[in-house]
Length: 213
Image (cartoon, rainbow, N blue to C red; front, side):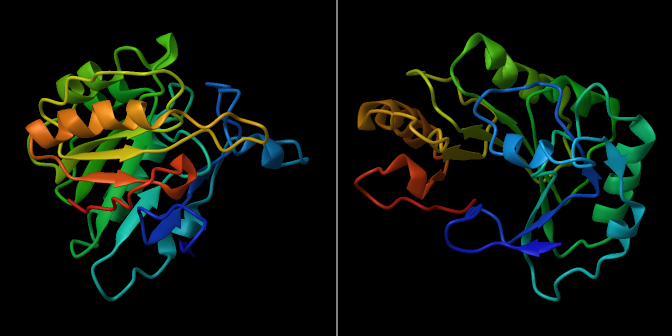
């Protein structure tokens, strides 16, 4: 388990990656591409020993699966279930899951300390992800969230049933930063629904907005 800090994934306290390997979504902007080039890093693996990590003593937000999409259709169900069984034991912590395949959430019973999220970049790749997130997650979880990162085109999302919004930009070298107005539209929709907003530093938004749910 890795502790997060400035310049990393600032909306969580720790990351945990018991499932690793090259994600088959193959999104061109993924920051993991440079790691998967090295021998052995691209192989899909289940690192059971990671499930023996000691949890932090104080309440923490732990992002599970930051190095691959552990909810991808190619990941064995028994691996995912083992991770969920491990996470639900640390009831004082919140475990955040993020996927571009939110339909897979429906195959498992939600854990009470789990936050279930999906990525929306504005393209056809993630067109129905918010709808699927709400439909395929169940009552009993801690909450649902949307990560608009990287925000590639302007969107006006329907945020019904969502409890947290994260906004970020494409961090690949040479990427053009999105206009402020793209974030403004999402923030406006979030405010209408009393949803807290967290804007990552890479968006270069002129106002610091880092609200926790």
